[in-house]
Length: 361
Image (cartoon, rainbow, N blue to C red; front, side):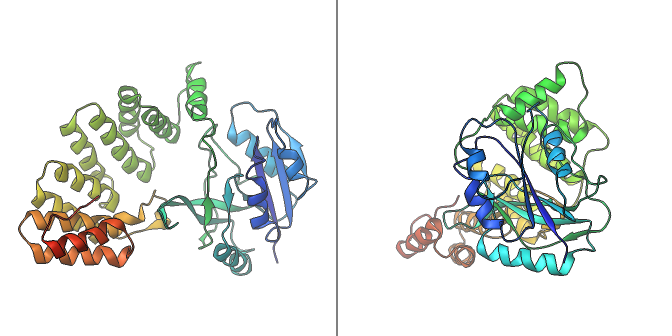
């Protein structure tokens, strides 16, 4: 069976590192840990699991640090995780199955990455990442921040999800600081970097600058289609924050020029009309969201609720306001099929029993 090196870069992760390593220690053949300047007990925790601990002076370049970790690996494949990642029990078994069925033929194995969750622990935000890669210089990281390995060769997909459970705020300014450091000497950003730079500006509520950065990205050639669609969504939110609502709608509709509609976009267009109490147009877009095919393997940022629960609960409200009480109740029951213990669904059932107005999201 093919062997795997777990390669990690860490800094001040003593609170979560053991949780991560316990979840994978028996799934890998080697643990390589690269410390970029910890001042807590990270290395003490790491030493309980491996003696392959290295120091790497941090220089605001994630790709450089990750490539250094890969260079220390001695097994057939490299698996990368962050310290606040873990594999849940069901995903551990799927990972074992992946090793047996996809290796050694695969060059890159894409695994789901779950990064946000509802109150019952179900993923509300997910996307695929290049998670297990052949230990070969042809597969290395690029990008000082939001670094990535370009999938190439034989790329296969597996179901073993990595769960991201962040503890604490971290450094919320780090990514933007790195981008601005790249721009200081006049270095031009690559299209992917330009997209993420615009998104970081949005996160920091620097909406005017985000609009400029995202608009520049959309005008460039060479952007990845999923980033282009996501850029339209983020641009729309920036314009909404600036009070430019008409432009916000046009930004969402611009995404339709890049590919077939995504349910995430349809739900946001539906919400635009919903806020204006135009129930007929809102209902149209929520119904369109339900007709969209979910394709996690596209690499898109996927919000599972947009393909089921969210449009159903919103259609309940829309149909009520359009005078269709029976249809509203039916949509609420359909929403309940996705989330039977959801408070909005349960409240709506009571509202219908009393003849009151149902609630949506």
